Length: 433
Image 1 (cartoon, rainbow, N blue to C red):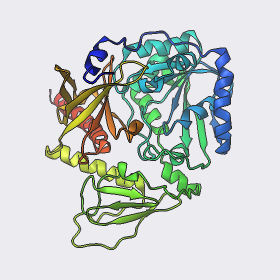
Image 2 (image 1 turned 120 degrees about the horizontal axis):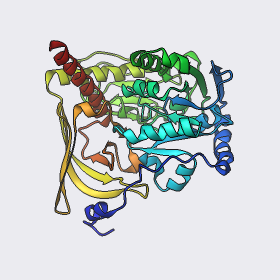
Image 3 (image 1 turned 90 degrees about the horizontal axis):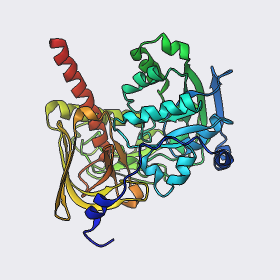
Image 4 (image 1 turned 180 degrees about the vertical axis):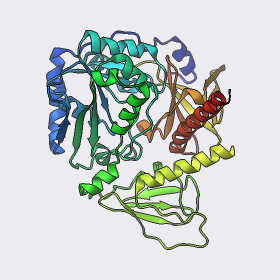
């Protein structure tokens, strides 16, 4: 591609066909999926606990937690010998659209409201009479705990009128956390539970259904590791942890956390933590001077939730804002990325705004706070750096911030907190009328 030709190429390419009906998983690919799944999960000493599954056959909606690529292989084994269609993000189709479509993949652009997807799901469940596998968290768990779910999930379940099964997987995040994908080789486990029968759905309200699903999605990988004494002796087990634990709880400095080997540390105040073989943190450095925070954490998710509280405080004070120079890659189809160029990304109480000039052409994209209950982020994505992606129904844009004074984790937390804040404000207005 010639320099400066990215925007022109992007305007002319054929976009991914999101309207194509789902393909029932081809019979000749079913043995292939088993062959690709079973050897690896058996190496991890996979076990599954089945509850309320007696006599249940497709069609049903399968809701799955999302930790790592291993999830898809365990899902294949959990529903054996049945086939399924899977809702997969656009980047999962890169360079393998034919294979994924014929293996049952249905493309979705993350954190967009896609009405057509509902009709595709209905076709799988009501015409094909198959399983529809959905990963509603829409991204790998950042810190081994469950992510926020879309409120529309309860409405969709009520509409579909089929049993709902929950696949809650354990150990996948511990084996290859999204901030360091090197496999650890620990054992894995899964709970396969029918959480709602068709009759229970018919007699329940949307709110009751959503509460039931939320309860089923509760997990804490580090707590599971501790309770089950899952030993991880990997010598670099803490490397990359600073990607999610970006703020020092002692000096309160952001973006100066780092990690190496089994240690996490703040390069600003010198505080250091050791990550044990059982996933717990222990501070190993002496205090230096007057520390502002002096909040110590041994449980990694507790640190992450403290960061969320800090972001919430900034939003309530009106001080939360990002204004970043970013490099923009577009993903209009499954053939690969198109480099558009550099732009400005702002994120504040008004939402996301991306603006730039690509090859002399003005470009602008906005996503309101109320449109996004969360956002998708990646760490060291294809070795290009940390990124945020923003999608429309037709396109997905991967944004790679420049410099070091940012955290995509903080942006993800802020997206969730801004959405929650906007919902509370809307409810307050409605109640005042």
